[in-house]
Length: 415
Image 1 (tube, rainbow, N blue to C red):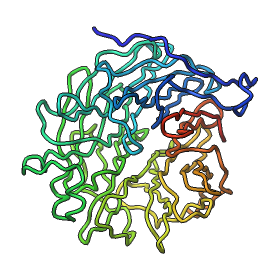
Image 2: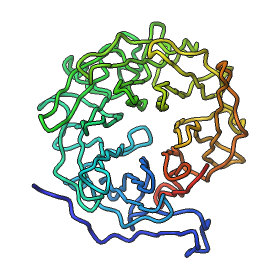
Image 3: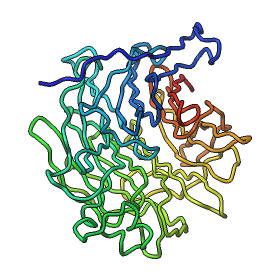
């Protein structure tokens, strides 16, 4: 079996002792030298933390992963995940995704990375696994059907209790069938054109890949969200185009391992109609009781805000509440995570004092269902797109930092 081997790439590691006085003592910097590093994703399990990101050079991109075995305090050298050099398609809403699967067969969890690639004129969804703690990655699997026409991307991924991988993404093959190839044309032509773009689902296991369309009418350039509950229920969320060009969040659940999905639920009628794609999708986490926690961006009173709601039955959601941010007119790119103690956190980015910053707020729910928020706290200066994951005694956050042509990935333990 082909593998992607460890290659000699410079990486700056800032430990708690502080080996680089130019950076915070509690931050780690991940960077592939000579490249623009961006779009991180993160997964954690106890002291084991994996960060995947994109690194661009000369118009081509590759996906890298770095591993920490001390809860995110230090990381090893990055390893290239994709086998075909320069194939990766990288942008804020098209970040690579990384997930972990722990079994008794190995001391380290299995690492799975999903990414979007362009190769030989086609756009593909791929994933690769590492079964040796991130030292090498196996040959990639392609998830969409062979020869599928059109554009696709904005994928999300989750791993079930048996190690099976589940993925969703947005797919334009319906538009390609009509001879229309623009990635955004469906959005600007309105609701009817959006019906030619669909949410797709695939599962990948030892027995192979199963792929199919779920729902037409998606808002095409917003990230998707996928999560698995303790009982195995598989939840999916995405931005959908409803009649009147209202860009609200769609939601569905599968309770049979992806064999079937419930009819789409409209999480809330936000009242935001736009003849174009916001490029800003939902985030989701599931707690130990199986409650779905959902955060998403929308527009209220001409300001970009982040809303939060929950569902206990996978069908109906509580009335959304607005997440307190730093008060700028545009809070964007939400993420949500639940730590080992069950505490819920929402992260986002927004322009603060003339510079973009990453923020974090804790959510508390009472027995009666009332929601309260802690004070927003800044977790780092960011170009955009902070991400979070539970790790040993808290959370680990990662974000892009620095000018576009010199950007790096910053990682910090936060609470």
